Structures are given as C-alpha cells and as structure tokens.
Length: 147
Image (cartoon, rainbow, N blue to C red):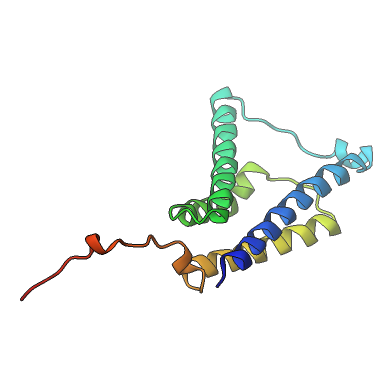
C-alpha cells in the first residue's frame, strides 16, 4: 500500500469524525425543548467520580488525537494508541454517555466512522499498511548467528 493512499484514508476518517461532531452539535441545538427537558441529568453525588469521568474522557480523546496524527506520520506506536482509544471509547461509551439523542445524520456519520476505523485497524495490523509502521532495520542491527 502506498503512503499516500493510507494518508487519504486517515484524512477521510478525520473528516468523518469532524462532520459527526459538527452534525451532533447542530442537531442538538434544534431538538424541541420538550425532549430536552426529559433528558435525565443525574451526576453522581461524589465530585471525585465526576472528575475521574472527565479525566477518562479527556484521556480517550487525547489518545485518539495522538493516534490519528501518529497514523498520518507512520509513527510505529500510533497503531497501538489508536487501537486502545477506539476500543476504550467503545467499551466506555455507555458509562460516559448513557443517554444521547441520535438522528439520521449522526447515525450515518457514526456508522461510517466505525466502519472506517475498523478498516484502518485491519490495514495497520493485518493488511498492506502493516509494513509502513515497521521500523526499518539498519544492516548493523542484524544479528549474525554462526553455528
């Protein structure tokens, strides 16, 4: 796989994420007030749980950003960082956002984002983009074994 092709896939993923965020923010502003009033807002009584939740959310977002930028520049650890961000985002989604208003547009962008993240993970671990992330070894690093 060519570097340019993989970078185009990563850019498409970034654009889908951005479109999903923008769409989600725009749609939430046009939700009828009656529906917004019915949204349960129940924060835990302990401030430490809220602080830990925000820290966890921030860590996942930061790992996702670092992972995507690293994928764009073919930084070898970035594929593991990206995988950890995607998996932890999926696992912790019900905890971080137990109630959310979805529309057709947010479903489209979210579905395409999930599909493309799966494609990226497959390409960097099992596919032709795998060797783009492997460190090239200098001839001096090869071990000669004489038996």
